[in-house]
Length: 297
Image (cartoon, rainbow, N blue to C red; front, side, top):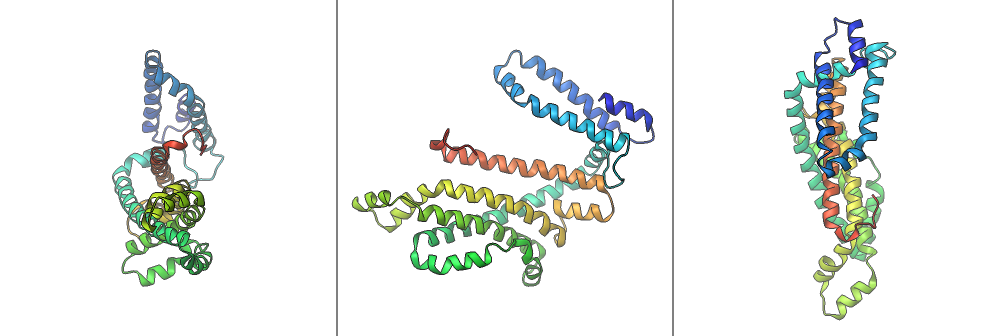
């Protein structure tokens, strides 16, 4: 706050009221939390854990302010100061909220389709030897090709840009989910299957009650890998054809050299993607509760 106020006096023509108010709010929240943590042990533990991260964040904001707004060591307009980014974040909040909503809908639809197709193909390849014989060469040829490389073809064969973007996201998710699901199914311990067969289990029981539960840890690795690939594909696909979404917003702002808006959208993306990733971690911890203390990722 002191750094920002110092440089604000040197450049009074620049509007930084929102950023200054933002820092005052941080100071106020810090005071409230410091008092509350004395009476609430969980909050005290959380603050003790987060203190290094929060301190590093504040220091990075100060450094960002110094090299951009203060001494202008980085070329403008490509590297705006944090005050300009926050100002654009506030002024364009309605458009950013609408873009976030469209990106969320497109991401979830494409991710769900990719997961569904990946689970089906992965189970079939992992369980059936004939399907594995024909399916693995296809995976080795099509899978390693980045989903974004199919953009020209997708734009030609799809009825709309939204459908092509969703299909590309599904394709990006399909490959890792298929590979890890097939690996988990095929590596199910033979002793588990033998015991189930001895007790009279049929094929459906072996697949859905033995093989799939045993493959769940591998399946979740595929889900996380697919989620990361879907983020990249979403941004690229939105920037080339879709008329709404965070990727479209970044491309539009860059076209007008509004780099403050570009960085504002990147901050929204970071929070957006981090939240989704955290939710998937929560689901994994709930499903794989028996692995608590064993897995470290």
